[in-house]
Image (cartoon, rainbow, N blue to C red):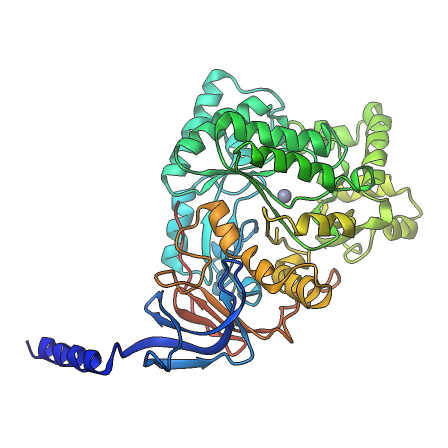
Length: 516
Ligand SMILES: [Zn+2]
């Protein structure tokens, strides 16, 4: 009773003063780039609980904050949404510092999507529940990975599924979607996804479409390995059309000398599909090197059929030796030669930080024989320098291309993608305006992935918010030192809680497991 009288008195007092309000957190005086793409403007932002409740002039509307952050001279933007990360392992880790996902918070990323490339656990509900229970530093959402589904039902078999196997795959996808997956990802370049025909993907994608999910793909061929880059874009568009599903091309690129300059052709196909009413979009990371494994980069897929043991047998089979070497030599040429493959994360001693050419020379051996030896000894992650800056920039300025890190261990993109986009492509080279760069890193991926109530600064949205210094925002991670944290993020709010406070991780585990 007493409480309600106090509340009533407070309300009357507020009304007589004209909509005076106190918010939990007031971000004052910053240059707001709200994610819509509209011009930057000076505004104050009020937050109550986990939501934005005020955008405007705090002084004239008499809004005060329990805590106030002075954002004068800084940019205030929606927290970034990364449509392609490999963070499920981090977020599920028993180690709190890994679950905190600081590598991403320091880039201004507040939501990460994982299980791309067709991979990850098929136990979506279990994974999301564990995140909620243990606590995570950023928000996280999951795809159901087609390669994992196929692997669970068929192992590494190169065959087409029987009717019973297909039914088993459908059941796993249905369950995953019902447990909150935002869609299905494929890695049609990688085994075992590579063994599937387009029809199999369409059949599964139809279920995903019915559940309101999207289709995300690492396409079958980003280069000239099999059906080619152009053939792969056509395959992706066919899946969109026949499964009636929004499709999202991950890390769009022209991989290797054979397809350099083909960005224009890819763009023409996507534009035509979009003009025909299909929802075709993409994401991109701003690096000239991709990140993969020695085996994925160089081995023909038939060598991997049947799994690890079968692969090892083939690699030491004298009857197959010449054919394997010939095909690997061509794959290495595609990617720019032995010197363009840098070993970034490996248990094989003595090769980390060296390129394949250097390692071969040290051993006085042929690079392909050296690569086979590395694979047999457990393999290595590689940074594969295979992209052309012109293609990167051509894709970058398309209004259907978002930012996505594809962050993986050993590649600087895991720690640097978003600040690199700001520092290099906005403030140094002026390829994008700040409004465009923010939009393609927030509202655009939110819309593409159907992430609700995030990615914009507006009343009622979740308070995922970043405050950064445009003068100092930059990546520091390099191919030699891929785990250097980015600089320039002053404050990062996740669901209204301050996770990066004056440039430092606050210890808050304010992320949420997001369900479709
Ligand atoms: Zn990929």
